[in-house]
Image (cartoon, rainbow, N blue to C red; front, side, top):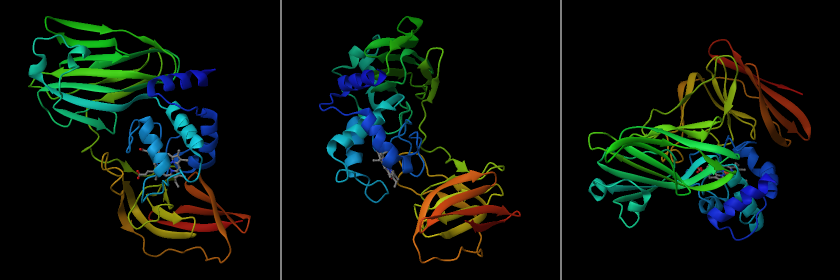
Amino acid sequence: MRHTTVFISLCMSFGFTSFASIERGQELYSQVCFYCHGNELEGGKGPSLKDEYWSHGSSPKSILTILNKGVPGTEMIGYQGVFPQSDIKALQTFILSKQKGVRELLREEYKNQHFTGLELTHKIFEGTESSNQKIIPENTFWVDNRFAGSIRFQGVFYAWEDGLYDFNINGEGRTLVYIQDELITRIGKDIHQERQLIKSIQLTKGAYKFEILHESKRKFGHRIAGNYGKTNGERIQFHGRSLQGNVPKLIKSNQIEAKVVRKWIRNIAPRSLLCLLPNNVIVAYNPQDRKIEKAWHSALINQTPSLPDRSAAPSKIQGTEIKSFTQLPEISSKNNYLGYQVKGASVIINTSINGQKRKIVITPDKANSFKISEQP
Ligand code: HEC
């Protein structure tokens, strides 16, 4: 009865008022949402719905708002006119049940002098005004700048299975981690002596109150890194730096197999499949229109910058444009896109024309080109 456990703990943490069924959410998800967000919520055309990066917030309320209203100007439509509210809530519950690790971080910064000479406990933060408060969309424990002060992170910890969990922290200064107000990890010099206390906590799958307190001396930037997860089981790494400003990821084929990605590229239809062939040719194929929109050789994808710009800026393709290529013949009858698969170096796009299945094959050709063909 694991589902019941999850539901009860979500209820307790978030005060859901009406019943929403995970099974119903899953059913709807696998009918509609999987197409863009992946079978396992891992992402595809749309973002992953189970990692720690949430452009629009990972709180139950933010998720519900997105489900109802969508994200205007993107392929994420609002579903409030499509499904009854009970179904939208079921989708929300289903998404929440898939979360793993830390979400919904509120970061507050405090001036150091508030706490000079005091033992760092979460009680002393109560009633002290923070100089800066921010909900951080990417749930890594980072700060904008080096500054002298203390930080408090408050969020939700999603235990993904029943079992023992612990937090392992490295970094300068002193750091304390609490789950449900219980001290789990304490590291660093606290007033008189160096202390370290690490213990595991037994959790059932579900959502828990989570808190980190951290303080560094003026000469250090705030650096917190470590890992957390199941004692003797799966662990999640984290580090105290923002993804922002990091070099954007480059995507290219792995030289043996083709790869298909969907990214927002200016002037390319969002539905287009970007086929990365092992010879570093990229073909943007629009399966709805049966058209190659563009192609490049010596190419790679310069992925969108990290959050918070991630959803606001398109990815870019670097490479040399291939100007002449053969298109498939145009058809006047109804063309339906069914899906794609990668087979070795080739990408196979499954379509149907007037109900008859067809395969479109995109293969590398020599060093700098590609071929497209159609098979029944
Ligand atoms: C046609 C593609 C498509 C379908 C179908 C779709 N989505 Fe989305 N979804 C997107 C895209 C694209 C975004 C990112 C929008 C943006 O922020 O630019 C998104 C964003 C989201 C977000 C916000 C994620 C974040 O990082 O904050 C949630 C939640 C979400 N979708 C849930 C769903 C659910 C549940 C369904 C099924 C009812 C669904 N989506 C169906 C394309 C889709």
